[in-house]
Image (cartoon, rainbow, N blue to C red; front, side, top):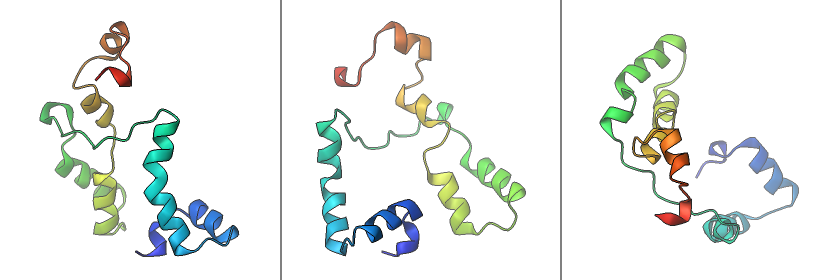
Length: 109
């Protein structure tokens, strides 16, 4: 894996503590367990619900028009990352007021 894929802050942190590749790999392997300990559950990204998602082709065209010098790889990354439609997919289309009224909690699934 290329180091250019890592955030500069993360790279700087591991570099500053003299971490080895195995130290980083161990942290990655233990990340989900560490998050679970503080009450955060990692889940797979939900499936797109067509009526709740953006048109990725159109989004790609908007990005290309706004950033004509952007590489195809960078544009695809911008399209693939969870974006504005993710909260709607996570709520399965329920409105925020509906989620609040039913006192939705992550452990009630």
